[in-house]
Length: 432
Image (cartoon, rainbow, N blue to C red):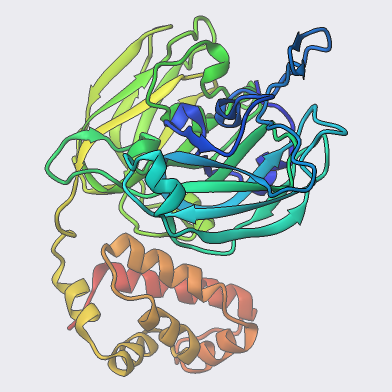
């Protein structure tokens, strides 16, 4: 089930690095006499039973220490399930009204994941990533992060005390895969990330990347029913450019509502602009379309090992799956391509001049030179088109004027034809 909340829109496609489902755990706190620190990382939404009480008062599904009455403040250290770049946090105070924490801040640290709690308390250097801010009681409190570093642990401080139901730490997992080991590179623990999907109507694509088997049908991805019969899809970034051996597509718990067909495509494009990645025509089939059985895992060998940076799972016309496993190893080296090597080795001015000769547009040419190094022709051609449409109309006019074959059609249509020809030239001809 998808629970409507501002988090879904604010941090779409990111992973809750602190969630217990990702391996996150609360490892130390100043005090949790009234409600356990372990509740902070529960994957489930906070619940409240008005009739449940303990010796300290109402039973609360969150973290809460005793009242400090103005002396100091409370804190809790969370070990992230996977190290990653933090983009934002959600400090959820659901069901805490008059006893919610009034202010909070978040700090990060990068230390071994097995660091002892005492060392985390007294020896660790912490960096502020969310400055102290006022919390809304009984609600979600979203804040963006100040830094772009990779963190292994976070520490929440509440001033001076009070309850917090959940702490969500939204970010991008850092790849921790050993190049010498074959692992599931779609799994969040190895850097996998669900980048985008066609629908989240009945289940989140983030569930596909969990390391443990699905608990029930709510713990998978199920798009809305597709009346147009044109299929649904989800795009997953792997933990790094990878050579893939096998893919597992699991329909566990989906019986009668599993897809009629499933196929998997791959692409090699390091750090692509997401809209350009989704629109790219460079996707290649790596698992041919097949008819899945209900409530069962399906192990498939790939017909092209890659390397690939992303996979796209296509289900048709709709239907749910619970897990996607992509077993492979990190590619030690980028694919060898003499053309790309030559472009990457050029001084900046020479590279800009070479690109300008293909379009007659100086700003586009300089931007392309600045995008180096290129690791695949897909990346080179994709960025050529992406950067072209980021230019202004004056740039397109300049390119048309520099092209002796320009027609009298409208600038925009000519620009479309121009970049199409440029991309074809970059892909096919290469350097002389």
